[in-house]
Length: 395
Image (tube, rainbow, N blue to C red; front, side):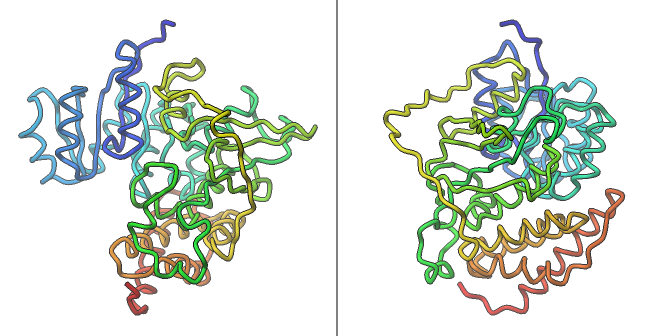
């Protein structure tokens, strides 16, 4: 198979998605060339990646980190820093494909820059759509960008939909089903949840992920954000998306059609599968993931999510239904609350309580430009900080 060489920028190359992406790229050196790598502050990790893949650009979050990196990499690698550096490598005319893997709201601007430049964007940053779904998707259409989902659930749905999918009704889709592992606390007694520690919350039973997304999996806010993302990606109402807990993480998501057919995408829980799929789409390449052994697995289990255990799901569904700037506020409040939990300022169950307090007081508006989304994000963060400051530390 002779695919044209793709030049890639990887936004967030030192995170779990970035590392998995580089693993896939290393298996296909004749098909892919790394153009730029970026990280927030992991200088040593980025330096090692630069030594192996020798990008033209490397970008860090601060000037101090960039100056440190300059002493560790080859002189012909141009080192940049900050939002301007990220935007430059995301939209550069030589770049074909951008892996958008920066976690959280920080990934919105560079991901949007890639879209506006008409790139092939591999979207692992769900917050871009959660915060600015309408504006983001409008730019995808205007710039004729190619948007391919990397989250295992959304990539699974993408694979289960017809190639010419242009809307639920036209395709005969009844509903989308997002699968969820249930995280590390799926069977933990409710009375013990408040005492769970950051290390316990980050000990995901199936996936190796960063700490923020691991906590989101433990609260199932991650699944709520994925619901919002799916509604924008596939142009469906939140009411047409169901969530099913599937502890084995073998079925990554499903699509139910009006005739009763249900199509599912199965595979081992390894992010290299959706990454390889999107990199080569519409072709297929080797990912390094082992074959699925259904005989060994033997059984697959399913259950409904318990919203008493996972109140974040209800908060996210309410935000998805309200739309406007509610999802942006939800995401911002959650990021602040998760950071406070990881810093041991609040307890585990307080995460959803903080988000709930912010959403109850949130004055819903319809953002018509990016600045309004950014302002909503800023206000929600301030509200969340105020709620946290009023609480007595529980850890």
